[in-house]
Image 1 (cartoon, rainbow, N blue to C red):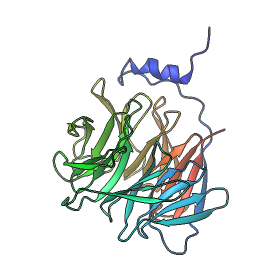
Image 2: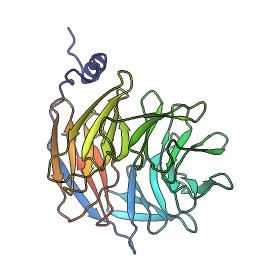
Image 3: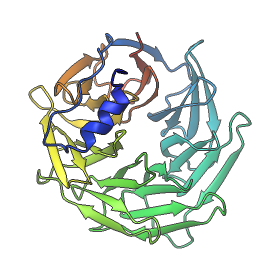
Image 4: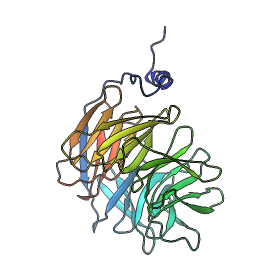
Length: 330
């Protein structure tokens, strides 16, 4: 009889719902933090990160108006200018291996081709009020969805380049956004304290209320089963929603006054969150329901987003102008 793989165990557990025990995890490798100061001529205001296809790491330089590229092999940074008035927030790698950026300063989605570094802008529709663009995610059809904290949710149809926006339910607050393995798109509202699912045909959003009131849902991320993990800024909780069962679970981060900002689920379905209150990043194992913190050696690291690739979890220290990685591979 063949041994049960972790992926098979995850699929088997999904049918049982969140009320039952989680699958046994693989033995967790010791966490190893490595950090570099950004070798740039001026402060960048590093905000979000995304692994690049060449082994480097992109980051948004919100203060200086650039897309940064960091080379872990040499510690070198390169800055690519995005345009006059640029203030980029989110960055992800697209299906085309390019960097896709939400640029609040320019009121546009910006694509930076890779490795040619060609910059192309997709402005919001004429007449759109200031959107305060936040983050973006590609759906299963290859279209890009994005949030704007001023109260919009939008779509860029990648084949045509057409950009459309809709008012978000309950106004201001749209923040984090993610896609599930099935290609569905979810987002959360920091000001509204809810999560929402997008109807990809109509662009309309259906609100889903978390069990904790006024929790300040800041970022969302899907695991391999389509469960939506939520970082709750105001409550200090990490929560998870199972759309199939309409079920929720929540865990309070350790420490006196946790402030849960970023959330990311890695290739092993381990959940990573940043805590401004504890100046730490924590790995959460759903099987054991335990947090494993890594405290930063610098004060006020302020990690606003987490993203990674197999064996690596990348962390932008917006408070210290450092970029860090936790290596999880044995």
